[in-house]
Figure 1: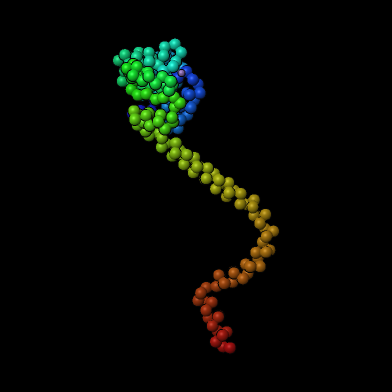
Figure 2: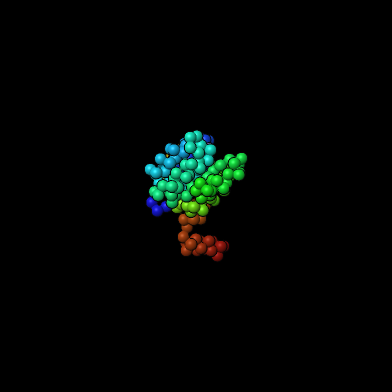
Length: 197
Ligand code: MN
C-alpha cells in the first residue's frame, strides 16, 4: 500500500491510452483511465491516484480546466499532474504550468521520457521486480513438469532402444570384465601367468 504506483491517465484517444497503459504496466505501475476531463476529476476524487497524466486537448472541459479544478480541491491538490499535449501548443507551456501542472510532456509521447518523468514523481515500484521472480517461478515449475514428463517417458523410449541392444552388447562384454574385477584380484591374475611363463 505504501508503494506509489497508481496513475490516472485522462486521455480521450483510445490508442494513446492503450500504448501508455501497456508501457507503464510493464514498469510496475497501475493505470486507471478516464476519457474526458469531468470523468477524470470524478475518478481522481474517488480513486485518489498517486499521479495524474493529463491530456490537454479533451472533449468538454480541457486538460487545463480539469487541472485547475483538481488543484483547487484540498483533497486532491497534492496529486502531481503531468500535462501531455501536442507539439503545436508549444506556446501554451506557461499557461499549462500556470493551471497547476507539475510537469509537461509533448506528443508524440517518448516512452523513455515518460517513464523517466513518472519515476521522478513516484520512484520505481517494487512490483517491477516481481514479474521477473514470478517468471522464474513459472519457468522452474515448467522445468519440473518437463523433467517429470521425461522421467515418465523413459519406459516408452526403452522399447525403441532395445533393437539397438544387440549392437551395444558386443561392446559390453569387453568393458564388463574389466570393471567388476577387484583391483586386488586383477593384479595377481595378470602377473601370475606372466611370471610362470
Ligand atoms: Mn486528446
